[in-house]
Length: 411
Image (cartoon, rainbow, N blue to C red; front, top):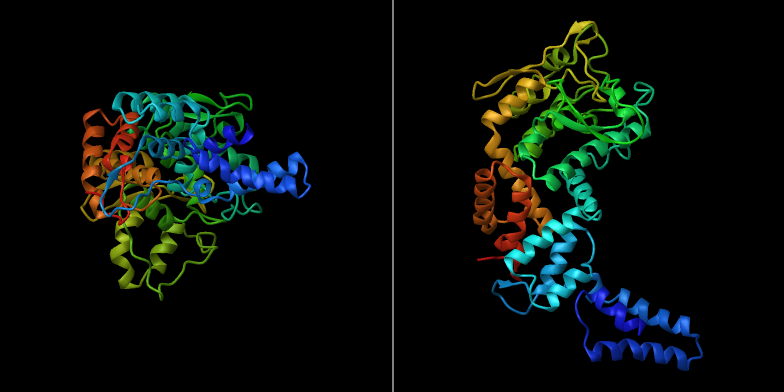
């Protein structure tokens, strides 16, 4: 009875009598050896937990052609995407009835699964992997001798703000462009004080209005600004690279091996701002071509220090947060940077987040043959006013998500 109930959950599909016989055989062998009921049952359960059918998602068939996932395989792909866990009884029941692949049923399940608390796992995993704050508080830490008030709790609160923002986005179908600029975010009292706000009280996070044009969106969040900084100072190159690669989806070649590094204490001496010292330091002509693409982006965030607090001066000097891109576009500060992104880089941003979400859902890097699916997803999102729920639905309804190939080619 125990095995009949457990094995279908572990293997994510109904079991055959021969499957049950195999694990019952282990149980009976243990009983013959004189082991107790509990120990004999444990032997069968351990065997199930180390079975390839449990450890691997069974989505492969012996064929060189692309094929549609069956209902049980689709249930697993869907649940590991949105819940980072095995399918529940409702998904398996729909799979058993052959209904899950029906478009309307699948869309209904997407809505149900997003409302389930387990969807937080997907939001946390996707956002921390995409937005590079996964290591914040672990391998990436502000120097506590310099930033004494940026506690471990505040690190966790800053990460929670970003996760809650993205969760709210997908749950309520808000515009994906809110990630670039928005008039709301999520804070508790401690995080609000970090942002120089005194109108939020208590430890609970809640949705708050944002009037400060320098906040709102990812680029005003402490999690992003801290994760892209050095322990003791800001890192404009890192911040610019983050925008260039993580938001625009562009790729920057690694720096030359002989590229000189800026000292950790840069900007803390000589009466210069970090920008002034950086521009003196950067003299290698082979670096200039790349730096002109990312430095203007990074320096536009210099009004935020290494833990995301807003400032006007550095070493007594007014901060120069202006930038000019290779195409001649100019902006000053984060507010104008956000306007630049929304006017000039909107397409790149939407395409990038679509690619990242599809890759995350599939658990693999995207290939050239995924491009038609990406184009279809982006077109649907643009048509629906950048609705985030539309993005999620289109990813799940896409050909790569609902099909599989052994040789890596889907067509």
